Structure formats: structure tokens, C-alpha cells
Length: 176
Length: 282
Image 1 (tube, rainbow over the protein chains, first blue to last red):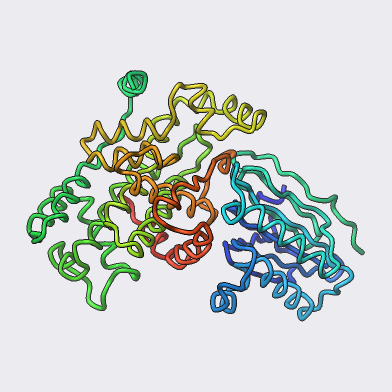
Image 2 (cartoon, rainbow over the protein chains, first blue to last red):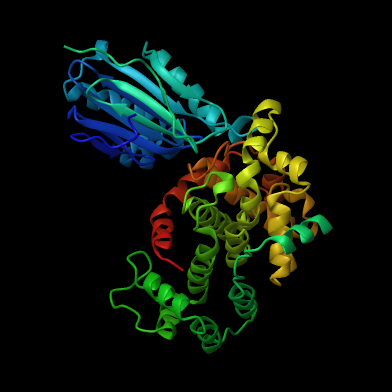
């Protein structure tokens, strides 16, 4: 269970719009209240560096001044900033594992009102453009989620609102 | 309607009425607002007075020198701002506790409601409508949930199953199982508390503002405030997003659907204010 506190490990909560990269293997990155927004996380399980951002909107284009201050608000700007910061901190691109959660969808909404779908579509497009694939994801549906990533193991999980049981996004990785 | 009244009469713990809000709204509508009357209304309630002063002097609202009494706060902040603080504190009393039936933790409904209210207030200021009335409608739009929560605590799993199985919005499932929904219950509650007809209609029809008749603009504001709050991650509970946005709400207010993301960002800029409101206990 990544959501419960464990001796020797520290949970760092990244708020909506936040972006954090960390090289402390004893840290578990977490983000809550993931509704229509999306969380994208990545970690290098060998270097034990990972990062995460929690975006609300797909594209920064119409909000450039906000994106400059808080790139994590937007899927496209967040991904670029996360990748840049991870590599600058010593992560190796080819080892990075990507995880995503969120993109809850309201019912019967199309176009501009279905922000959850727009966020996940943009995320998939941006990842594809960079030749990246998700190692694990929990996207869509109608529920709020929390997301957790353990930097020591590269283990990621989500917890759905109102449910104690976590859903693992990938099996724990063995590192040497 | 009789089944709702019947239900309300059987609920043991009806929340205390925020009676001050309709009275204050009435005072604010007058061309010459009497500061003494506003102060007298608030000071009747000592804990409300303390909370309003605490907020008025907080980093988000306060000036360099703290206001020492309500009169000073009213003079410094203005009636409209003081009304927002009073509404927020009064709303917190009802909306802050956990609503287990809906799968809401303590504070969830309050954060959602306050975010909705701030969003609707921003839109109303843009469009030149009464920002205080709009704030109140959006703040109280889900008040019916605090009533239904008692029932839903045991039947919520059935409602969720039905929603997931048939892809029905939760509102519709409430109607199928209970014969009424939280919006109707909220409207009846406000009517019982003698709130103006406009607020009763806005809360009753916040999921379908085109059905609110002459009060459809107010209902549209409540709807859009609600939608912005969800979009900002201030949804809550299990299957929180099993709801249908109403394109009519945008049409009624003459807004393009594209404006949603702009209002999301502008409301997001005010999250500090929402957090300041949240930290004050009613």
C-alpha cells in the first residue's frame, strides 16, 4: 500500500498544477483530487529519480503566461517540463517509465465540455509524438482518483475515491 | 412534491437555516444600504461575527491594519465583500461535515460548493448580473445532498451499481430509487427556510437550468459554477463525474462553451481565497 505511511518513507503531495522531480528513493510521490485533470508521472528505476505533474487542461497555447509560471497546469507544457527536469537531474531517457491517471469524463458531453477526454487525448498524442508509451495507466471513468509513485521501486498505483483498496499500475520492479 | 415534503418531515437532523442570507440579500438590494442594519444582523450571531472578522483580517482580504469590529470591516471591505464572507461562513456550517452517503470526506462538499460559488461570482461580474445572489445560488446548489446523505449511506452502493451498469447520471438514479433528487430536495429546503423564489428555483434546477423559467439565468450560473468546480478537481465522492453538463446553461448566459477553460483558469487563480474561506470554521 503506497497510500499508507511507512517508517522511513516520506510522502510528497503534489497539488493540482504542481510539478515535482525528486531523486530521494525514500520518497513516495502522491497527488489527490484527480478528476477531469490528469496526472503524468515518470521514473527512472535505476537512477531512482522520478517526477510528476497534475494538469487541468490539455494545451497551454491560450494561457501562455500561466504556463510559464506553472507548466504543470497543462498536459503539453507539463510533459515537456517534466521530461526536461528529469533528464537534467540525471534520469536516462531510455529507462523512463511513464504512468498516467485521471481524465474522468462527464456524461454525454462533447467538444469543449469533455475536458477529461480532451486531456487524455492530448496526453496520448503528446506521448506518441515523442515516441513514448505508458507503462501503466488508469484513465477515464467517472471517478476521482489519487495516484502514488514509489521512487525506490518504480511501483505506481491509484486509489479510487471512497475505496481503500489500491490498484497497482505495474508490478514492482527489481533493481540492483 | 409531497414525497419530498414527507421525506423532509421525517429527517431527524435538519440542518440549521442560514436565515441571515435572505435578510442580508434584501438589505443589499436597497439603493442606500444601511451599514448599521448590516452590522446588527451579523453581530446577533457571535461566532459568525468572530469568523467574519477573522476572514476580513486574513491575508487575502485584510488591509495593513486589522479591522477591530464589524463596522470597520464593513467600511473597509464594502457590503458586497462582507456578504460573501457571511455567506461563506454560514454555508460552511452546513456543508463542511462529511457526507458519508455520497462518499464525501469532511470538507469535500464545502470545497466544492465554495469553488462553485467563486466561479459563478466571476462569471456574474463579467456579465453584469448580481454577483452576491449568484454566489449564494452556487454556494447552496448541493445543499440537498446533506439531507439525502442520511438515506444514501445505506443505498449508495445500489445507486453506484445502477449508474455504472446502465451509464445513468447519478441524478437520474437518485430519481429512480428515491423518486426525487438532491436538487429538488435542496430547493424544498430553501423554500422551507424562506429563501427567495429565485434561489429556490436556481437550486432546484441547477442540473437543468432551462427548466427554471424566469430564474433560468440564476440556475445557469449555479450549473456553470458546479461544472467549473468539477473541472478543477473539486468533484467528490464515488462516481463524482457521472453527471451531464447542460449546453443550455451556456446558451442562457450567452457564453461560448470554449469559455469554460478560461473560467477554470480564473477560478483557479482564486483558489487561495477558497482555501482562506475553508480555514475559517463557522
